[in-house]
Amino acid sequence: MSEIDNTFAGIAKIIADARDNAYRKINEELILMYQKVGQYLSENSKEASYGDGYIDSLSAYIQTQFPGIKGFNRRGLYRMKQFYETYAGNEKVSPLLTQLSWSNHLLIMTGSQSDDEREFYMRLAIKERYSKRQLERQIDSGYFERYMLSKGKPLPEVIKPVQNPFLDSYVVEFLDLPDIFHENDFRKALVKGMRDFILELGQDFTFIGEEYPIQVGGEDYRIDLLFFHRSLKCLVAMELKVGKFKPEYVSKMDFYLEGLDRQIKKTDENPSVGLLLCASKNDEVVEYAMSRTLSPMMVAQYQLQLPEKDVLRKKLQELSALPDTEENTGRYDNT
Image (cartoon, rainbow, N blue to C red; front, side, top):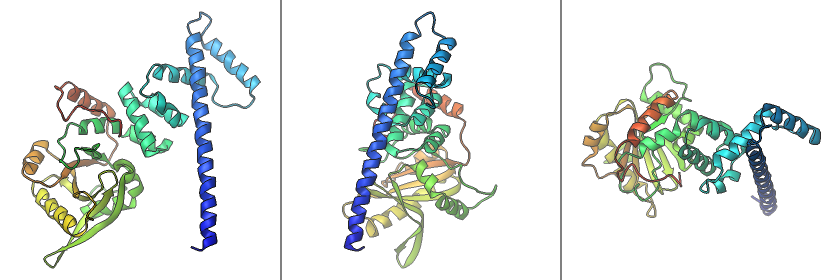
């Protein structure tokens, strides 16, 4: 790139940064306005004259004062009231409110059933910079329930010091797979839908390649998918299985991780981590198979359709009823 091109790129960055700052400021003022309107409505709802007629009259009045303004019909005003009442007095989430768009707030309010769930999705949407479509997909897939259920699983030592980025189950409903498919089909479909797969995995995962080669003893071996995780600062090898988990998968992953650490890992990176993604698994079989391995690896299962959230919530309620342990306690402030 020439010197003048570098100058142009610098100016473009200044403009882009200023535009982004302006959008954020506009959104901040918009959310604060909705919150204040909601507070006004909440406080006035104690009056005997308050009701649908009051809201309809207020909506009509706003239209006369600000012709063409959107979002101030009866439904919109009730949403502002709900928004204020949902988070009133919640100091933990107050700093987060202006960092989300109104459309994302509406998704979280309508799709969550508890303060913990709302806080989770707020932090997740901010960290991952979710669009409305992306956030809606995560809520529909029961990401909160799947994340909380995964927290009860034991973690390899290399992962314990940081927030666990792995789930116990992954939803890949975006794949266009036939009724009967092989591991090669599965891998190609994931690569083709990598943007959606990264949404499911998390933005800290960076895709490196498929069928990644390592050579040992003069023979070639290939890892189905290879990623780098920015927070863990390590390579993540992923092996795909279209059937249920089998104990022999662990030794093969051990071999791959050793190859990555000896040949590919850089000196300033942490030991490589493995993820076995299977169609199904038995937790007792997994525990037996991994009890003596020293390699950091996880076993997860995938689903080709969006799960039933009621089933996930029931499982989470059952887990919550268990006595607290080191594995199933803790927060998700840095989801």
